[in-house]
Structure formats: C-alpha cells, structure tokens
Image (tube, rainbow, N blue to C red; front, side):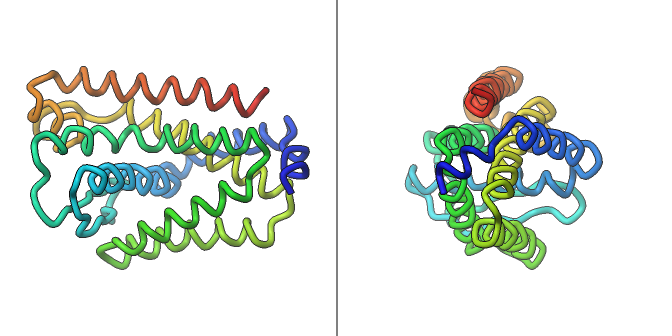
Length: 220
C-alpha cells in the first residue's frame, strides 16, 4: 500500500487536494474550521496532561468555530504557559507530522492515527454538537482508510494535511490580541507580562515554518 499511495500522490492529485482545501476555506470556513479547532483543543489537552493536568471536557461553540478545554483544577502558572501556547501551535505541527508520513507514502497510518486521536477527543466531548462534529470527521476518515482506493487515500490525506497547515496559519494570523478577547495570546500575555503581539508572532512563526516544510515534503 505504501508504494501504491506514494505513486498515487501525483501532481494532479496534490493540486486537486490543495484547490479543494482553498475553496473550502473560502466558502465553508466555519464548517471545515471545526477540524482545525478540534486539533487546536487537542493541543491544549495533550500538553495539559503532560504537565500534570486532568482533562474534564472540551466543547465547540454552536455559533462559530470557537472552542474551549476545561481541566478538573485550575491550570498552574508554569504549566499554563505551554498549555496555552500549544493551541495555535498544534494544527500546523500536526499538519507537518502528517506531511512527514505522507512523504513516506504512509497515508493509511496517517488516517488511522487521525481517527484514534479523534476518538480520544470524542471521549472528552461535553455536548452533542461537539460529539457529532468529532464523530463525523472520524467516521469519514475511517471510511476512506477502509474503503478508499490509494488515490483517494492520498488525496484525502493530503487535503487533511494542507487543511491543518493552512487553517492553522490562518488562525494564528487572525487571533485577536486585545485583553478582553480571552484568546490564548491574551491569556499568555496576562501570565507572562509579555505583549500578546509577541506571542502571536511566535504562533505565526511556528505556522509559517510548518507550512514551508510541509509543502516542501509534499512536493518533492
């Protein structure tokens, strides 16, 4: 399957996946943005657990693509910094990891890693909207992983990688920095006394580097 998927990742397939992602980001930003948002919250959860927190739940807002993760106890000052920073860093970093796998022709493992992570996220979903959104993405990804031809697996995996890379970059660029926004960069500014714009620049830097390297891996 590795050789078949690698052979299927041709320029037409990759170009089609890229075009589809760009169109979706323009015409269905809120809907496809859910995938990026789930990954964003996954970053908070993973780093929170690694720094000694226990995840209570996470949820998606019904009126936009916002979300939040809640822990069983208040996040400490020291652990709160990497936990807050991980949110906007997670989608581009996950996209870069997917690009590494896809570069090796491993679309099938990429898809099933995505399914496993989505199922873990679903186990912490707080409400029906969040549960349904996560399960729909996981179910469709699993369907492609089971029944998809190599070309479909390659195209879907490439689209997922590009969505995380480009969607993550868009989110990093558009995150509000004002104190009343409650955004991650505003939280980081309050915790560290460093300007929110500096934290935003850090997220943008991570995203740009991931996009640059990810696209390089996909196109060479």
